[in-house]
Amino acid sequence: MSGNGAECDCLLDPAAPEAKEALPLYPLRPAALGVFRPGSPESAFLARMGFSAAAGQLVVGPDATDGLFAALGLGEERSPFVYGGLAAALPEGTIWRFAEPPPEPVPAILGFAAGAYHYGEFIRSRRRPVRLVLPTSTPQAALDQAACTWMVRDLINAPANLLGPAELADWVTAIGQRYGAAVSFTKGEALGTRYPAIAAVGAASVRPPIVVHLTWSGRGAGQETPLVALCGKGVCFDTGGLDVKPSAGMLRMKKDMGGAAVALGLARLIMAADLPIRLSLRIGAVENSISGSAMRPLDVIRTRHGLAVEVGNTDAEGRLVLADLLAEATAQSPALLMDFATLTGAARTALGPDLPALFCSDEGWAERLLAAGADVHDPLWRLPLWDGYAGWLTSPIADLSTVSTKPHAGAVIAALFLRRFVAAGTPWAHIDLYAWNDEAQPGRPQGGEAQAMRAAFAAIARHFTGV
Figure 1 (tube, rainbow, N blue to C red):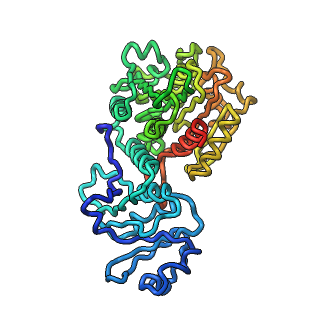
Figure 2: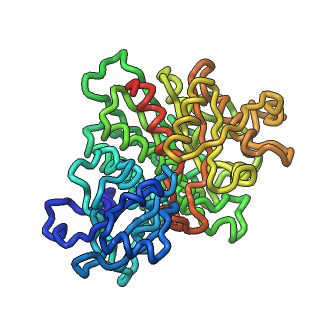
């Protein structure tokens, strides 16, 4: 894994020689059917096929020159996923162009690319890809969002034997270099001193933990420019530690670095858009393994914050990783602090796989994130930081325990644990996500998913640019 990744090979530059072979694709809403090429063979064919332009309806047929054309129904759908089934449904190996401008160009390009995504590094033969010629006026935002979606999916889908802490750090370095960011690493003895909780999580693995710190400033940014701090849980594989997971629970744990992947994707979007902010990204890249040096249940470990934490369960390691990262990030008094993590099964039990849970200490940012998620079809659902449960983290021998002994409100308890490491008054958002599609849907193939990335970017971009 080099850190370069596939860059949306489904999108074709209009100057490419193959673009001349492109077939016409018409995205149509029901209201446009009555005026669609009246008297043409295409219009007659659609009528014979009963085409109503319902959302996702696709018809491929002969045009006036005995070639092919395609019509995609949009209904009243504004989501990018209405375009998400094209790459799988159009004839193998074909090249297409929008014969008429799509009503919303960013969702159209993003949706096509999201549906065309493939993780094919180990597949010698696969379906020849369907490609789309980019319109000449394609918004850069569409290309950036498509590329970041592919990158995040690549990271999450990568087998854990090929993507450990060092390889995840390499990805951050590669993306940072692309946008002129500074990237630094902490590992070895220094990591044990600066990030003791992360060191404890990674102590059992032969692949040592690494903390990666990326810093970047938009053009013209100064010392007083607002700072956005991002933290990502980068557990490259999670056995559960000595509280070992059952085999079914361990099966997909290569995706336990999904929070780090999304945080990196968000950072890349921010840098690509050159937002007028200062950016700080911290990723705790680590493996929760099993050996004689593993942390044990009821061990007490120190944290960067200084709090002593009793390990209630070694499978609650993600909150330890984030605790050290959040403690360092909050000390810089950011205008916004966000963390992303595949943190709890309780969030999935409450909201299912498609809705990441949002916990937020700031009402304004909660409203911005929820509104942006709805607008860009990357939804979030807010859960409470319920103070009444804070006492459930009490430990008899340490400042707090990592878990509660009660069987309820697991996602809330995890968020309350993290809040102990965030300075009062810091606008903070914690997103507990699944980062995976269990089943394929249009635009959302089975496997890793960049959940909450576009929602967070839209909220940040709107707030700091006013657009």
